[in-house]
Length: 256
Image (cartoon, rainbow, N blue to C red; front, top):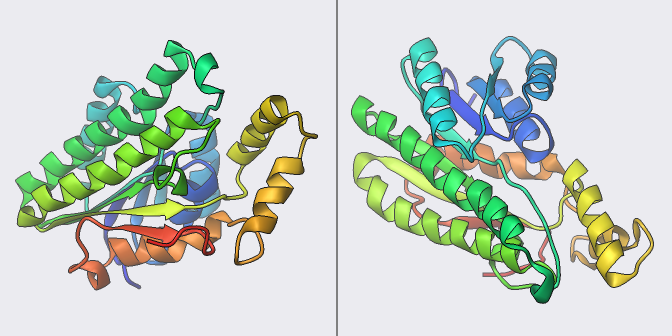
């Protein structure tokens, strides 16, 4: 087991990629805190995963909630070894229709929330003096702009940049900060994405999802489980010499 006796936090861990990562981490021997805005879903996930998973409430857009969550984990376990910054939201609209509310909400969760969760956990890791692993979930949307997805793309580009800066700054404390960049992934969120594309591109429901899946060189959309190997690698000692990188896990959609 690559993560035996490690303590991990997975934000947005109640469903999708976050839940798949939490499940795999438990199988690899970690104790996992599923930190999510929806505590009922987080409890359902933790109960399904087993007694080494525990639900904890977290609103990454609220700094007090971040600090409270981190303090609760440390009070229960004495440490944090791994953070997976997975919580994120999505919206899309033509440039001339993007609202200030949508802009602020996306950046509050995807960028500000990610950064200050990273900061709060890094402070605990530094104080303990044993290093740690921080994994930020980016996106292929952070590698290139898309006409209808300007703010989400910008937020994920910021995640890649923050991963580089934090990685370079924190490695002196033996804290490895890296990222994972998924492509199109078949999660509950993509049904919402598909509906928005249907609205703005005048498509039938399900059409955009089918088209983007068919365009992936691998031949299909990604699944949450396709990302867990990378998440285990970056959280393990195997990645001790990997610093400030964002690994593409996208079926060949983007090469960098």
